[in-house]
Image (cartoon, rainbow, N blue to C red):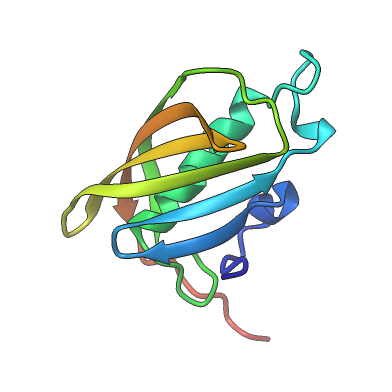
Length: 133
């Protein structure tokens, strides 16, 4: 599954959606030097948090015509070890789904090693579709 989102920030970072179903999502990001902090070859924590958020957001509600259908209400991340390697992946899981609120969790891996754990609450939205010119 290729990028199914019109989210320019995710495209800019190079985040790819690998899988999405009613139970969660899996996303990936190739580590590049510009995604690292000042410690040589260690991914910036904000990149790790972003990847977890993207996985949880895609798992919370599928995009419609490339437009996200939920927004983050709150999130928390716990860093377990430095992310140092070639590939970051994040796998999310729905913990509880209501009419308008979804509670998610995500685990972030660097080359298969667990480096962070996140939880988040997401609200479903109905964005206005852009009018065609």
